[in-house]
Image 1 (tube, rainbow, N blue to C red):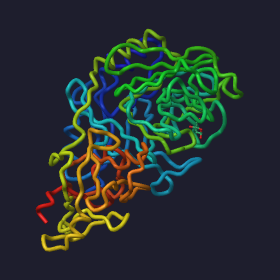
Image 2 (tube, protein in one colour):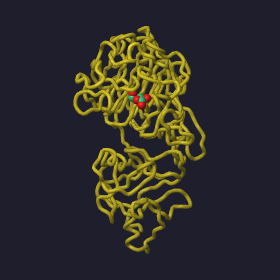
Image 3 (cartoon, helix red, strand yellow):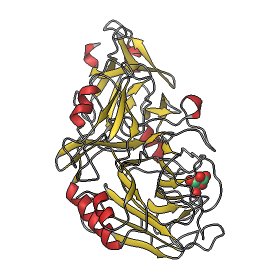
Image 4 (cartoon, protein in one colour):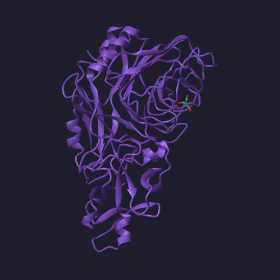
Length: 458
Ligand code: AHR
């Protein structure tokens, strides 16, 4: 059985089931998600390899070969049509055209399930998905449940990396108008023990870790690489749980009455569904989503325990984040453009500006050095890489505000992640929509792709 079969058997059926990695019903063989490729803007749907199985990542890889792909739709497997698409502007605007949020790279979060490759949804700040016209979700004080599997090592303190129930107009309409899972280190409202990250409930104008609107120390700092997070809420009761999605069982971090702060009892849930953003389209947060569902009714602990066992049996595991020519820490490289018509160019810097320059073996040394990079272990994730300037040691290629820059190491979490890139084989086409993400993305910028080449080839 899949997680939603277990919820159904318990009398609390899924009203939405989202996953780019696997079917969440044993009989589901329809589309899991849609990707759009950069070379010609065509889309294709990715389905499980077989009913109830893991996503056909090979079909995505074939469709996206030599170009970039974005996740355009995360389909609802429940049959209610509650698909997630690019989030529209709300209280806050996204970085895309007309204030829409960014879409996630389709290759940003590779994993394996039972040894088979699949891709999660890598959400960098500015990225978000939403459905404001959901059918069947909990409204007002009605009961609902939800779980989501996140990457417990990918988070920040921005508002708000959420999955769950939110406002139908993308605006902050007041306390109690949301009920969504939150994961991260934001402590502007509530917090748990330690320095985070925590699983909390975003109930609007507040992230709650328990009954108090401030700190509840029973909610632990939790950083499992694969994190199962659970939230449920009904009339004057709610609970937060968490556990390692790769082994063991769930723990209850809070189960009890609603917060006493005004507006949260009864609740005023509106029933939209968000992923990666706050209820008002706050877009400062980051995280990774693999699968999640929302139910009608307050699921039993027994059902949630059986779903945890189902998730463990799915065997989420990490896989290499890099492809193409292997890199080694300490090596000096240059990075050549692969886009046809531009392949005499190399990635270089002029002061703080990152650009491309035509460079040959007879170019002056200073220009060659501006295009020479020492490979370092990724400052923000040691599975990937950072690139230190040859002629400005201590400065690294980073992205900032969706373009690349050369920046002196600030030793902050944000700088480290902005300066970390995973390698991919050189490509011919870019969507012009995809933007460099912290930690995971190919080293690329609008319209150009680069591949690394030994400095001695100048
Ligand atoms: O509750 C925290 C956040 O506050 C919500 O996600 C957002 O809508 C508001 O800004």
